[in-house]
Amino acid sequence: MEPTGRILSLEELPAWREAQRQAGRRVVATNGCFDLLHQGHVACLQGARALGDCLVVGLNDDESVRALKGPDRPWVPAEERAFLLAALRVVDAVCVFPQLDAVEFLRRARPDVYVKGGDYTLETLHPGERRLLEAMGSRIVLIPPVPGRSSSALIRRIQAARLQEPAAEAVPVQT
Image (cartoon, rainbow, N blue to C red):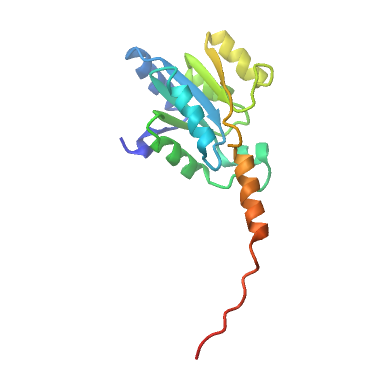
């Protein structure tokens, strides 16, 4: 299936979820900004997919990323981030959502298992997300981060490299 065929709207998500249920598949969900996709993201997605039969990824849209991460983000637009995620073999569906939290995404995805990577703990999960997941009976799994692999670390490396580059010098034109 083409990656774009795996990108769902919030409105399409419940029907996709019902099809998985009818097929007897265990649905795993995760969510995030996934700006500057890196090894840590992929490791988390692989770990999440291993916990079930299919993986749906909730993806913050550009406006929510700006609100969460700052005015200079995202570096990669939502359409491209969704395409990259959907192209990964471990991802079965991607759903872009506009909210600052994942409550509506999770309500529609109704995952059997919910995975969060990085530095999250049960205490730092969004309280509304946690309450909803517990009410639905979803298992919550936290996957530890890959040391040194984060979007923030990648951005710092890029910025440091740019500061070390010499200024471009004019090259004389040969006539």
